[in-house]
Length: 102
Picture 1 (cartoon, rainbow, N blue to C red):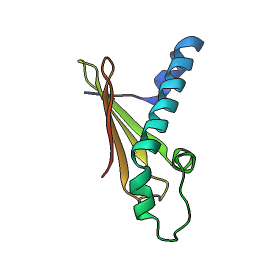
Picture 2 (cartoon, helix red, strand yellow):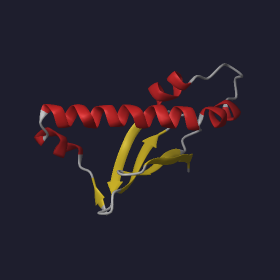
Picture 3 (cartoon, rainbow, N blue to C red):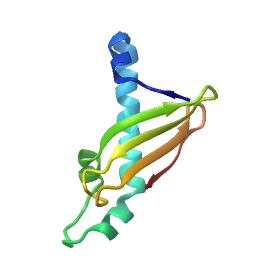
Picture 4 (tube, rainbow, N blue to C red):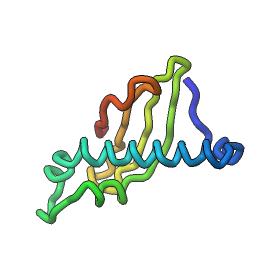
C-alpha cells in the first residue's frame, strides 16, 4: 500500500493535476450525498445541513492506494460528526464503493 504524498502533485502536468482535482471534487460530492442523513442525525442544534455544507466542512487528510487499484481516501469531518474521521473506499476501475465515518 502506498500513501500519496501531496508533494508528488508538484510534478504533475497541468492536465494530470486537473484530473486529480476533478476526482477529489467528485469524491467530496459522493461523501456529501452518502453521509447527509447521518449528518442530519448528528446535528444537535436542529439546523438544516446540506450536501454543500458537508463538502465545505470536510478536509482530506490522506490517500492510500494498492497496486490493484483499490484506494482509500481519508477526511477530517470538520466537526460535523463530532471529530470522527470519514473514510471513502473505491477502485480506479470500478469507481467509489462507500463512505463511512469511523
